[in-house]
Length: 106
Length: 118
Image (cartoon, rainbow over all chains, first blue to last red; front, side):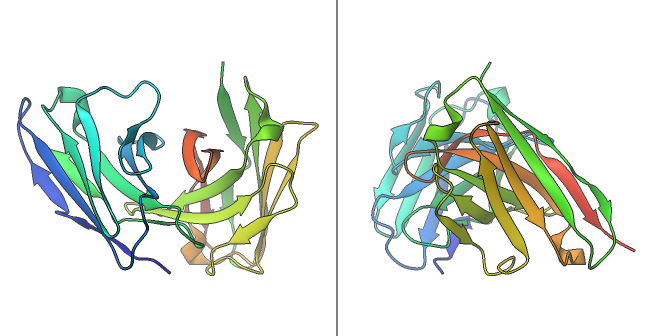
């Protein structure tokens, strides 16, 4: 099983600041990595797939990069609605796994 | 409207069974792979089971293998999760999800809470 480790667990920032979230895999997943956003009481929302492709309707301030075992989600300038928990997920092999999440808080 | 409408959660005793349903609308359900993902209270996301578009290919997390069964009825645009031999650590919000090719999830249900408790 591929373990995804996200860091930091919590990121304390202000609106307008840049957020950089990390996801590290226990072995290479190629570029088969996605990022999701989850707000309290809501289902996750797909942001990025295949490491760097924005999903439909996702604002350009969200970008993804990386390959192999190290990936980054960057939010260029935080909007009030971006404060949430972010998860990475790989599809490189079974079982699919998610990272433990990074909470972006004010 | 494109959506997944979930039903079937509730409280069940340890060792009991429950069936979750997920009704799709607004898209060609039979053309997409699907999965179930759960989230224990206050915890992260855990993938549970996957089912191919045709319904012939299934994969399960080790934690639910031989206890849970995923199925679909494409004529009814509905996905199911039959959960047997439930344990306390199965307590979670269960989400159904549609897989954007391949095995990334671009449409989610709202989730349904399953509580396993005596």
